[in-house]
Every structure is written in C-alpha cells, then in structure tokens.
Amino acid sequence: MTLLKRRDFLKAAGAVAVTSSGSFFSLHGAENVPRAKSASNRNLFDARDFGAAGDGKTKDTSAIQQAIDRCHVMGGGEVFLSSGNYLTGAIQLRSQTTLRIDHDAVLLGSPDWTDYPVTQVRWEGKWIAGHIGLVYAIDAEQIAVTGSGKIIGNPALGGRPNQRDPLRHPALIELISCRNVRLEGFSTSYERMWSVHPTYCEDVTIRNLTIRSSGGNGDGIDVDSCKRVWIDHCDISTGDDCISLKSGRGSEGHSLMRTTEDVRITNCTFADSLFACIGIGSETSGGIRNVRIEHCRFTHARSYAIYIKSREGRGAFIKDIVADDLDVSGMEGGFLRINLLSSGLQDQAPVPGSEGIPSAENFRFSNIHVDDVPVLVKATEISPEKPLHGFVLENVTGTCQKGVFLAHAKGARFRKLHLTGHTGTMINLQP
Image (cartoon, rainbow, N blue to C red; front, top):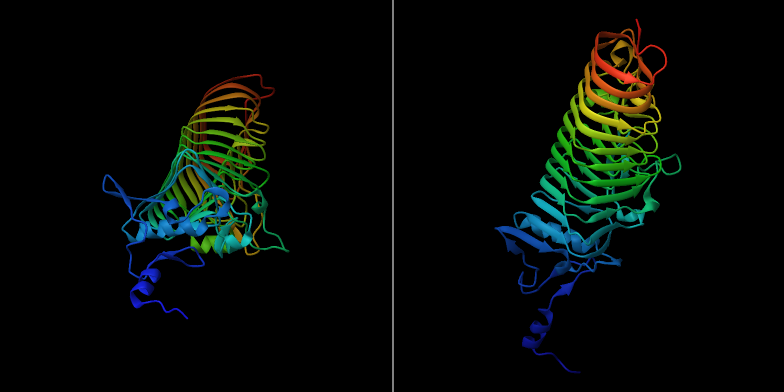
C-alpha cells in the first residue's frame, strides 16, 4: 500500500471541493472563493464564477444563491447573469444586493414544486401557507432586480389553491416586508399566477417593465398593503388585472390595518384579457388611500379600464383616488366602475355591522379621452348608509354608448363632458 506523504496529502486536500449543494470551500481558507470584480467601488459577482451553467438544463439555483449570499456578506453590490438560460428554483435576494439580468440572459423557473419553499404568503387578502415566489425577498432593504433580460415562470406552476391542493402557487417576483426596492428594465412571462407581488413593502419603484401573462389569475402587479409605490413606464398585458391594489380581507385584514397608500401609476400602457386594467380592491380591509394614475393608455379590458371594488364585510376605506390624462379604448365594459357592495369573495369572518361597510371619499377623474366605451361610468353599487363623498368627473372627450350612472354620492361635480354617440341622458343620478 502506498502512503501519501503529509505534504502531498495537504496539497491534494487543499484543492477546491464542492459540497452536495454546489457550494465552494477550501481547506486553506477563502483564497478559492470567487472574488468580486470592482466597478466604481461596487462589488460585482458573476453567477458563472459560482458554478452556474446557464444552459437551460442544469439547475443553477445553488450557484445563483451563493453569488447573492456572497455579495451580501461582502457588504452588498451586484450579481449578474450574463448571456444564457438559467434554470432555477426560488432564489432569495439579500439586503444591499442587486440581481442584474443582462440582455441575452433568461431566468427560467423550475417546474418542480419542491424548488419553491413553503411559508406564510398573502393570497386574496389573507395570510396562508403557500409556495414563495421564483425571485423573492423577506425583510430586506436596498434590493433591486434590473437589466434588460427576461424572467419566465414555468407554466406548470400557475393556478389557484383548492381543497385538494390548498397551498398557494408561487408568484414570479415576491417581496415581503422589504424597504427601498427597485425593479427596472426586464421582461416577464407567466401563466395563471401573479407576476409581481410586493407585500408590506415601503418605497418601491417599478419602472420600464414589460409584463406578459395569460389565463385567469394572471395579474401583472399586485400591490398588497404597501406604502410609497411608484409604477412608471411599464407595458403590461395580462390575463387578469394589469395592476391590483389590495390591503387585506375581512376581520384579519381589518385588525392588521396595513393600508396601501401613496401609490403613483404613471406613463404606463395597459391591456387586459379577463378583467380590469387597474383594479382597486376588492381586498380593502386595511384601507386604500392616496392613489394617483396619470398619463396612461388603456388599450383593452374585458371589463373596465378602472374598477374600484369592495363589499360589505370589508370595512375600512377607499379615499383620495385621482386619475388624470388618460387615453381609453377597447373597453368591453366601460371606463370606470365603482362597486362597494358585492365585489369579491365574502370572508368567513367579515367585519360585522355598519363598521363592515367600506367608506369612500374624494374620487377625481379629469382630462380623459375615451373611444367608443360602452358605458362611461357605472357607479350605482354604493351603500346609502355610507355614500361616496366627493366625486369629480371633468374634461372628458370622445365617444361612448351610455353616459354616467351614479347612486348614493354626495358632492358630485361634472364639468366639460364633450362626448358623442351616446343614447339617453349623459348624467343619470340616483338619490
């Protein structure tokens, strides 16, 4: 039997070893750990240096995650995916890190459910057990996903939870309790599940995204109990709401009282094949306030361009909703619908009595051009016990088949409605 000399043994053992999870380590220390490249004093890490293949067949989850983790412990910086197709399960962003997906790079979601950890996630205004998103972060700050590449979810993972499979399906991008978030420049594609889902987040910027989805439940961006959100220059065409603003459902959401507030939606283009372009609600039990929608184009919706919705049993409020400078065409329902009585599922534990009737205040819509919308405004489903206080519609031009139908509103004002093609009275008010 030949015995290795101690010096030879140490030399052999000092080579880089690979663990079962794909992590790199050295018996001599950290000299073989991939080092950061530097650009303008910012750490840069290439996922390929950590073992990512980018061939669309090898699972690169561990390699990408290690690059992110290394970036984080080194004080932050950027992890980039160069040209290639990166097949991966769920990957977690860490504080002070940016994931950059270059132009010819694609992040591909794994088809395997076990690649998406189960935790508490928000679903239709309730916290339930479910699979976390493909790209996710929890309680992180100063995080970003950028670049002009693509994130593509696996079609096998879409759909809704049911009695046989009660776990919520994974979103494409999911951010929970994060601060100072930036999503910019990339494209997404998914089926039958939400694309971007920030929950309990603050100071979120979403710019220059191209979002595509198909099938029911395929929302584009669901803003869930968040503060200070700016969505700008996004092109969104979806199988359900392009953007949905939510804040919880029933007694659970009402007791938590995590309001969605200070949301700006600007310079975006929307097309929806199943429901509305922008949905405000129907999960509103934590309240929604201070929303501005400006300089946007609405090119198609199965229902309405803007749909403000809730129901008795939600409670809380929807207030200070402003829309200005909108171009609206291709609507199958109309421009605006307000339903505060019966939209969405009733919770098993609704907010009881009068407290459960949502209140509404200060809705303003101005400088709108509509092209042959079936109904300009349908807003008759409002409780007489809690009427809408403050409704303004002004400077609206174009063509519509029917005008405004409004019930239980106080302080409604209409100015400069220059529309043609309609039958019947333009403004129809009920007590």
